[in-house]
Image (cartoon, rainbow, N blue to C red; front, side):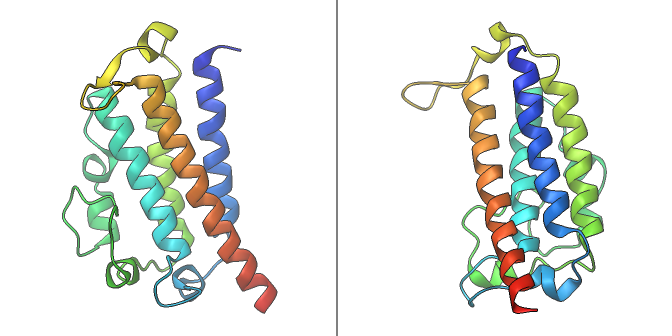
Length: 170
């Protein structure tokens, strides 16, 4: 298995977790927060997808799906176009509301397709390329992609945990 195939598999697992987590949930369930300071399923899935879109598009020197495919307009959120959710306060988290999980999975699927198309063509030499010299040590493309995967899986797990709470509460 090549490095690119390992990365594709990891991104496939994120996609599976996103779909399993939001499937069949209504708008209120997607917006549910375990307390007023907590993140919702909708916010977590939107944020993890925004991070992936932002970081992978930057690495690929491509426009983000968020703007290129007008997911920005479809979501209609009150944030700047470059906002990925980092540092959002509880009121901003509450602003991420969707009518159904289909909007979330649609955007995620669009980002996933672009990610897989980019990642599947990478070589080990590509992964060793420095993409951010502002850190010590400098960040390589491989490290950046693993960082996105780790962040996305953490947030997908958090969203799945919230879904579990909802299911147990009935």
